Length: 156
Image (cartoon, rainbow, N blue to C red; front, side, top):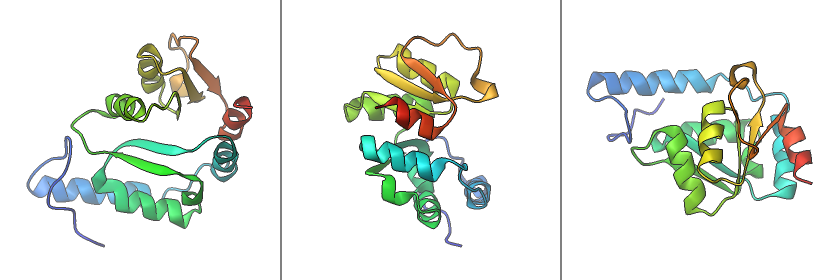
């Protein structure tokens, strides 16, 4: 396993805690499997849009994320990967990245992020429906759907 990079972006700890944080992050995502509908959903989305993966994860996670996407055959559906190389928190970074690229639509699974993006003028935010993101006062720009394929079909 490669060692952590010399410099970390954002809120990563320093000193010995830095290596521990990197190791924990590596273990956390390495064993995860994609959602059952991820392949089909990304394929359908890529047929309708140019898919840009905007993540709040720092560039530190880039090699791990790219390897995970390749291992599960999901990388072929992505036009671009956009990692957080700023000191912004995840939702703020996503807003920044979307505005910088003039992207009017976004898919997320975090209700608070969806709420922020919609309130800040992102035209349409598709929210993957989970029990934990129910009950927030979403504006009309937020569309909650049950799956990635359902989101893709909504785009037609």
